[in-house]
Amino acid sequence: MATDRIVEMTQRECMDLLAANHFGRIAVNDHEGPVVLPVNYLLDGDTVLFRSGPGTKLEAGVRGSPATFEIDAIDERTRMGWSVVARGTLTDVYDPDELERARKLPVAPFAGGDRHYYLRLLIYHVSGRRIELPEGVPDGWYTPTGLGHVWLDRDAADLGL
Image (cartoon, rainbow, N blue to C red; front, side, top):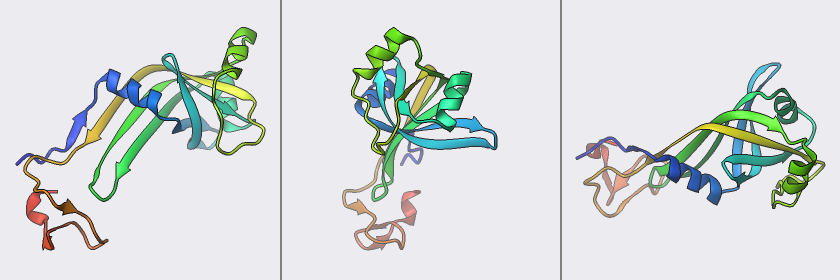
């Protein structure tokens, strides 16, 4: 039975997941060190586009700072999921033509408020991984309680998970 549950995704799979989703986390450095902030985004070509108000994200974009963007999904019941990480340079959108085009795109922050600045992550590397069930796991595998994994009311420690 295989125990390695991590599968590397292709760049195309990663970009498809970035295109299909609209909530992620941007990681930048501020004066105290790394900070991770949630954003609603849109994949615009090969870049991540999102809106911001004044503050940490905008300051990082104006500086042209390195940044990392992450999206994921996990099913805690089955312990399966995936994660995509995009690394790049964060820039603010200030060119009048580019800004006009960005304003026409459906990038709407859940939080609302004054978020009229547009930021773009220029991706230079993207990677992703999926966590899958190992081969040989019987049907009926589930996690009904916080007591650990069980399979048909028996302890599943022998499954190597």
